Amino acid sequence: MALDFIRKEHYNTEDLIRIVALLRAPGGCPWDQAQTHASIKKNFIEETYEVIEAINRQSTAGLQEELAGEVRDLAGGYLTDLKIEDVTYDLGRIDLGSDVVDMLADNLDPKGTANPRNTLDIYGEIISALPVSLQFSPRFYPTEMEFDIRVEPNVKAKIGETRLHENDLRQIIDGTEIILPVKLEKYFPGSGFTPDQKIVIALRLVKRGGLKLNL
Image 1: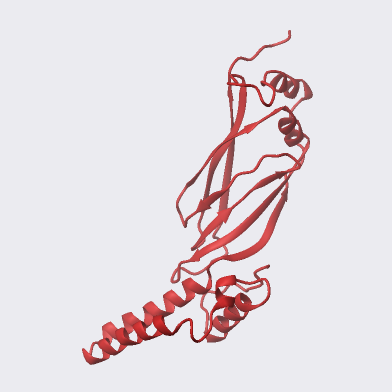
Image 2: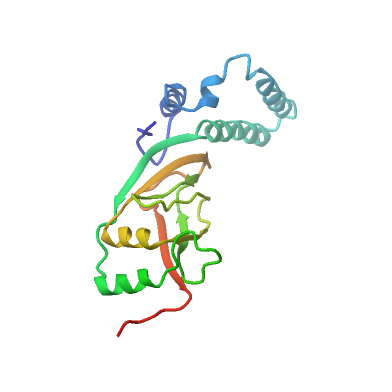
């Protein structure tokens, strides 16, 4: 489902109700859709006892902590396993001369070569400033290149090396569309969303083996 929700500095009860409606609607979160009053009884009773204990201790700070914790857990749970609409980006043609492309392609071992020595791999990292855990599964259409990676807030996630073959290389140079399926794994309440928060993806190439030049 597409996450049709407005980013704000602060959210209110109506926003929470809308989030729950999104999650329980068709195409939302299967876990939330499966919950009933009966299924949440056990957890509700446990949390109620903790709140009552804080009241019996006459601990205002403890009561605030318990209630704030319930709100955080509720928000974190409800914003889990959301499928966000795929992001697409047209890479366009890379300005690289055909003679250079031919030289690189001619120096790659064919796909299926046992113990290849002349290879080209893509790798990199992703860092996100958003207060959410994200699961990325980028695909470089129409090539066969794809990978999966989980990204935590403000933690640089390494993209492992993915092998490029001749057809992949030529297609990427000619122009490819990056399809970026994104799954929201977990929300961390308290941080909020701001317009300057970004997701930065850096990709690099590494060539191994010999390089024969036709002069």
